[in-house]
Length: 590
Image (cartoon, rainbow, N blue to C red):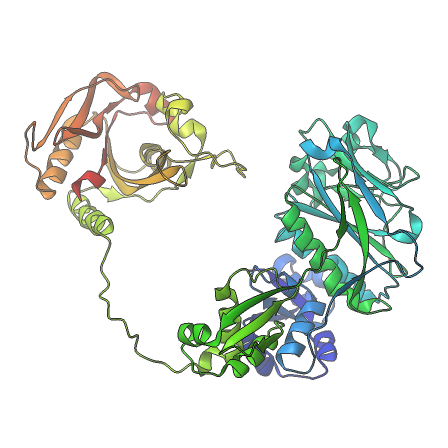
């Protein structure tokens, strides 16, 4: 959950009322939030960096409030205050309106060229006119952008926000993409011009911006936005130009959002303009901007779309567990910034979803808001009308029973990561990655976690390597899921519960692993035999030593392998002694 930090005194001033810490904590709970921490900038610095770094830091009390991840409208002081005021019925939810330029002139225009298609093909824009900033409002404006970047924008990979002083630039604006060597401008808070290539090198050591470089650094073309005079506004998603930077004295703001996901871009733009349009000369109005696409389409943003949903009071009453009239439920929803009224046909309620509530997708979201406004503590406890008996999943029950008996057999259980590197499941096991049916992570944060594991053996071998100084023999096992590609499944992959065990000693100990197989089969009540029982037969597997590998069959179906690991496998996992292993599928025994 995102955490929003607000100054307590500033918050109470905006709410028009002072609360004790306990009263405000209760108010947050009633509104579906959580007051996570009461602290100050000085306390935070003392805790994180020590007393010396905290000298001169502010003692102003800060409230850290946990906000649901999908409530983008509560990520700043303005949205938080507005939501609480409407909830307490001290304020009516405002209506947001897109307007044309006041002087009757042409709206600002952003032209997208076809070169952007390969990097960030979408863009939206809007203008906030005659806005008045104070220091606190300015800081909140910057903070909201950062919160949105970390949340809905997915660290700028989906959307990047750019804000510019409109009085320092002139439209129409052009959003295009160029080779990095051809882009040159003075970036925000720098004293000289750089090419895009130089900027990527410069920001590799920047603690903030270096996290976003990977988004475009390997692309042949970098996205760039110019005004009609060729002045660079921004190079999304990395940095804005210094020429158009906003300040406390800025009166007119041009906001652009470039994106790989148009829906997210629209939502992001709606959030920024609805939160801060209250500081415009005409509150809650936003000047529209035209966006021209490469195919000639012209769209006007922000959309600020309102939509209406119809649901019955009975639907909400049954699912929440209350018994309220349709009029009462409509009033509860109105307190959650969802203007509602009874339609006059039975107990049907017309609910208007404002542009700030992108989290409301389904009737169940409206039902949840009704429950919050009613108060979870006010819902009377009752015995469920349905009578069910909980039961453990058969696969999990079998897993637990096997775990206990394998531990009783002298093996120690290990619990390893479900993600691993491509090398772990391929090269180190002497296999080809293309033949492993591995599910790859599209944006791995580290080479250690590139794929979902296709077998349990690498995790156990790495555990052996980390504990090789322990007294021998080392006997480990794990019963967990692996993930395999499967085109027959709707998501293209499936989980498979497997049992893997290893024996590591001065001698291979094949007989120990073979004995463990016999014990497992005894526990599963599977007798030796070729047809209805289990048997092993010689097999070749690149992971195992030639001539020391066997395939395991149960009821005529292959369920796994056992044998002595190949010396190359042992050495690649930084082990120095022989090792035997067994790897079987336990799902056929359910």
